[in-house]
Amino acid sequence: MTTTALGLPISEIDLFSDEVLADPYPYYRELRDLGPLVELPQYGVVALARFGQVTDALTDWETFSSADGVGFNDLLN
Image (tube, rainbow, N blue to C red; front, side):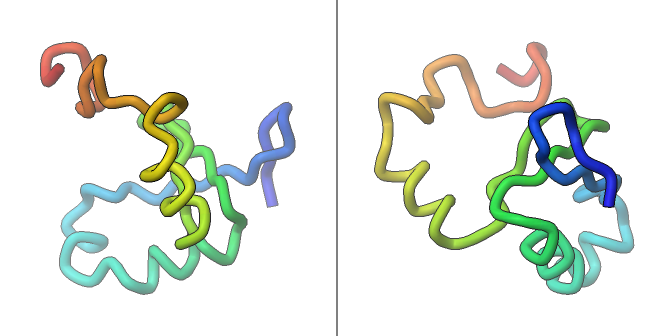
């Protein structure tokens, strides 16, 4: 498994590919199996892959704010 300098696993899954969009659940499982946080370098983001981490993020609005937008690029924000 490839990891970042911080020890996070890296995934090359393209969450917006036709294959993933047609049946995302095997890919979600792959992300969960890699760890609670997984870097997606093609998007420059870290994915929260497990329920506990998503719940924590949704209840910690000071750390995980959407004030700067939620898109993956400045044009969308």
